[in-house]
Amino acid sequence: MARKVELQPYHHFSRAEWGRLRADEPMTLAADDIRRLRALTDPISFEEAEEIYLPLSRLISLYVEATQQLHNVSTRFLGADGRRVPFIIGIAGSVAVGKSTTSRILRALLQRWPSSPKVDLVTTDGFLFPNAVLEERGLMDRKGFPESYDRARFVGFLADMKSGKPNVAVPVYSHLVYDVVPGEQLIVDRPDILIVEGLNILQPGELPKSGKPILFASDFLDFSIYIDAEMDDLRVWFMERFRRLRETAFADPKSFFHRFSEMSLEEAEKFGLWAWEAINVPNLVENVLPTRGRADLILTKGPAHTIDRVDLRKV
Image (cartoon, rainbow, N blue to C red; front, side, top):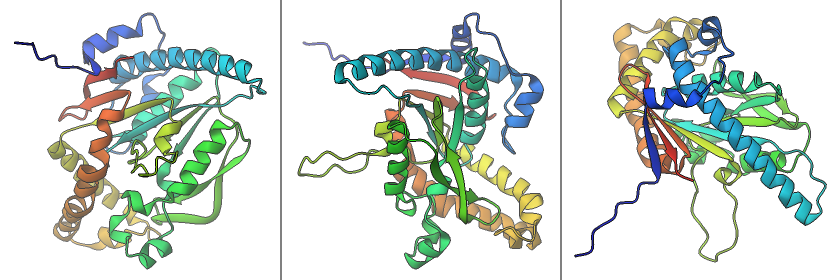
């Protein structure tokens, strides 16, 4: 009988195995930097940054170098002007998994390469439709689902980046007012590396039956990272963050969620659990989690919110 061969698309590493891949790469961040960069309830330590993100920074430097060489060959073949375009890194994963911390720490490490590259960070929150549009379309309870984003504008932004266009405007989202800020923009001007963080950036979308070429956000990514964790752990982290926000940001009278700081703890907890079960879980199961297998790198967290395993796609 023919032996069944199981194909494994990833190399698998324990934390210790991955940490050894830093080789002799020096750590350029201090413990104070890590404390400053981590999110509200993400307990990342200096040791984890050194063992996980330092080897990742080294790997990305090799990818950037190889991509630049390919770009030079392509432009020489086409006789193009060879203008600089950014290496784009996408970071995806569930709400409360730690995407923001990963993005900020990775950006800080990349900025401190000897060549001092310009590294910009953009979140997809700015590409959400304004609340007025979401309310009009009955989507306020589906905020964060693919249909709540202006996907055409987001793809247009990435296309502008990859064409080397200068001074590209990005909408600004305020978590305080829970909405896109009218008239406020972030200008992204030809970075060497662009980090894009968001829930759904790895989604391919549906292909037209006509076979007509169509572009998705994931088509513009040079390297993609998915941060993974068990559902039960994500729920715990989401509720921990909700409680901390209730005591801090929600206490601001200008906060969209100010009413939760004035509720009883029992009432607030009930709402937090509803938001997790009714909004975040369906979005995770239907839209976010299915994209995990498309990532170049998967960082898997254990119950302690620390990365225990790294999976790197085989080339």
